[in-house]
Figure 1 (tube, one colour):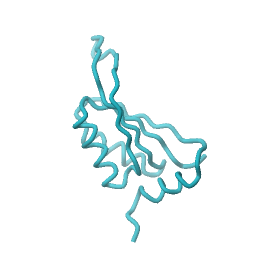
Figure 2: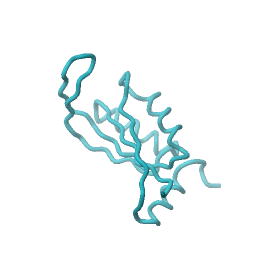
Figure 3: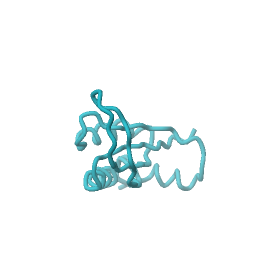
Length: 108
């Protein structure tokens, strides 16, 4: 295991997604966040919904993930936001080293 985590978040608008993405990177909770538009079909409170959403993929570490989740919850417009994370098992080591350097406390 690498200690790197990919956190997936959805938002209802580009503006909301961008606000969350910028906050996560500025506050060193994510090294990078990718934003992508997509369609969603889901059931909410018994009603089948179809809408456009924005998906965010935030690259962070397992150690920082709890703080990232709390920050997203504080900024998010949804009552029950999608915040799901998966450990990254393998990949390019220098990239993972960069992610680890970019999250957490600011370097001196």
